Image (cartoon, rainbow, N blue to C red; front, side, top):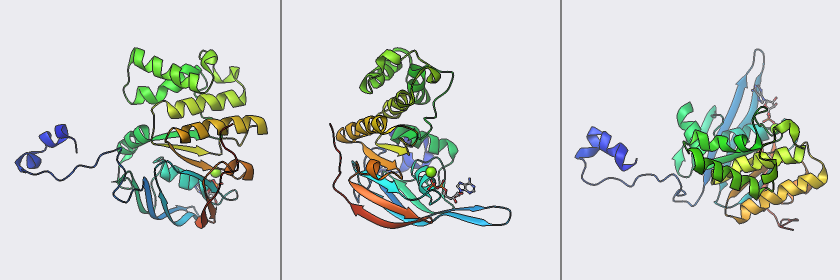
Length: 263
Ligand SMILES: Nc1ncnc2c1ncn2[C@@H]1O[C@H](COP(=O)(O)OP(=O)(O)O)[C@@H](O)[C@H]1O
Ligand SMILES: [Mg+2]
């Protein structure tokens, strides 16, 4: 609770000593940035029950580079959506930087998401009618960053991914690799603690895939935590830790020596 919020709380004003307030950007006492316990996501359909996640425990420390692997339908995106606060679990708890997020409402989840997480998706998820610059500005608009500052930060993010000269292009005026670069710029513009990438190279050719992975390697070197979903072995080879998912469960979780690094 911030001082301003405490000031609005009639109870808090009577308390002399305040308990330490949770700081959004300080990891929990355990040092974990992510602490998930018993996460389940169960879809109840007309006739069947789909246990998309069936009890997942996962701890992630700041600045890890994690690859989540598994066959199609194993629950990778479901797990990603929970970790990214895009969805809430049917059961289980999820602490992000010490804050329990499983009980938050949609607006609170959106605020956490915008502050802490950058997303990169397989199909880019760019606004079709907006320019690269405007797509990259979106997270800043949501966090209330105005005019000039917003423009400068979005341009700086586009420069980081080598696309300053495509700022005025719309997605259909860009190659697949360039679209994904715009998405990476959008993911990093808010300087989030965590970047979640769900099959970011799924529709790209091999050379372009490795270029996109180099951008993620750069973010990791900058101190960001990277969680990458992929079913491609060579792409998972960039990560320092491999987590295998099968039928909604984590079946292995191992440190690995990255096979690729910065060029
Ligand atoms: N909204 C949904 N409603 C019902 N079933 C779903 C939904 N989303 C995913 N599933 C099911 O949950 C399982 C895991 O899906 P998903 O997490 O997308 O797998 P992956 O990303 O590993 O391919 C699949 O069997 C899928 O059909
Ligand atoms: Mg998926």
